[in-house]
Amino acid sequence: MNMGPKTKDCIISIMLNTTILAFPFFISLVYMEPIQEKTLTLAVAMFLMSVAIGSTEKILFYLFFILAFFLVATYGAIPNSKVVTTVWRYQTLLAFFGIIALSFDKYDIHVRKGQPLNNF
Image (cartoon, rainbow, N blue to C red):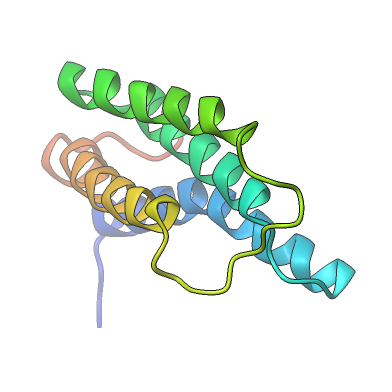
C-alpha cells in the first residue's frame, strides 16, 4: 500500500493526538493495577481538550471544550476505589466520538487543505 505524504501526515497526527488516551493503560501496566475511573476521566478530558484546541470548526471547539469541562467537574464525584471493569462507560463513549471528530478534522487539515504535519 503506497500512501502519499498527506495521508501519512494525517495518520501520524491522529496517532500523536490519541496517545493521551493511552496514559491510563500505561499507568495500570506499570503499577499492575486496574484502571481507576478517575484516571480514565482525566485522560479523556485532556484528550477532548486537545481535540477542541486543535479543531478548525467553532462548533467542535465549543462542544469538546464543554465536554472536557464536564469531565473535569465530575472527577471529584468519582470515588477513589472505583475501577473500570467494562469498556461501556460514558468516558469511553466520549473518547470514541472525540476520535471520530479528530479524524475528520485532521483529514480536512492534512489531506484536503494540504497542510504538512510540521508547518514550521
